[in-house]
Image 1 (tube, helix red, strand yellow):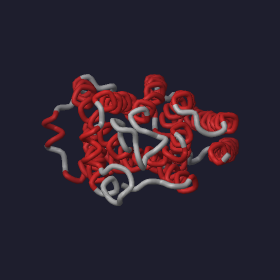
Image 2 (image 1 turned 45 degrees about the horizontal axis):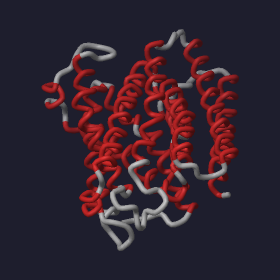
Image 3 (image 1 turned 90 degrees about the vertical axis):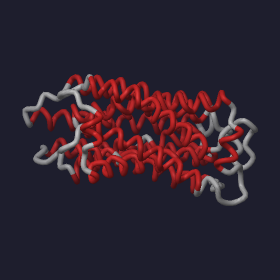
Image 4 (image 1 turned 60 degrees about the horizontal axis):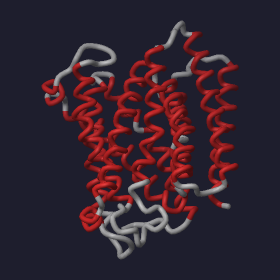
Length: 335
């Protein structure tokens, strides 16, 4: 299987993770113009599962390093299967809530708030589970990224008030709940892997490819419960049915699947990079996604169009703090 052998490559993969995690929600916005998010989300989940299978049978099965994908799945212990499955279920509930928050409060507000909370709590949880890197630099970098997220939230709030929009308090509260849940999912999956030795993993533990597949199965199974419930009792609008889902246009389904593939690529690369970068650093770099989402909101979706000069100064400061925070996080693992 493909294994990362140096820290620099691990950092590059984490940056790809950040781009993917900050970009997948654009597919929701594209589909959301005529396709309810509950229906979009099923395609998104299918995309994640299909991608995990393809990745396992390709990169997870080539070369002589480590255990191949199918061989590894046969030897993973029930406890590690359960851990990765629970990680999928926890992530799924948090992500469904985040998707709902995006539809209610907008991507520029919901994404930074939900993922910002997940960043802080998630780094603490993952570092406690697998301490790797300089904690002072790591948490200083996280602090700078949090400041960037706060600046983005202030800028978004000014734009909403200037436009006469009060924002959705339900959307904000939903984003907070999503962030708390999403801070824990990575640890469940990481604990099923031998992060110290991907080449010769401890018997009974999973490689990143197997862990990602089991995690994806956990998302899919839990979606039968969580998303079915939300289809019947949606946060907004009228209930939707599976009949409506199966009658949807192929193009709409493909947009959702694409969103799942984009997110799945980022997640898989984060797990693969964790062997060299450590779970906390890999997770922290990936969670720079709110700034990527903010860039999409600013330049593509024009969510700050007509904003005052003060708002643009806030956005400039946001990116300065964000880039500085990323630099500190990277340096924390290079020491």
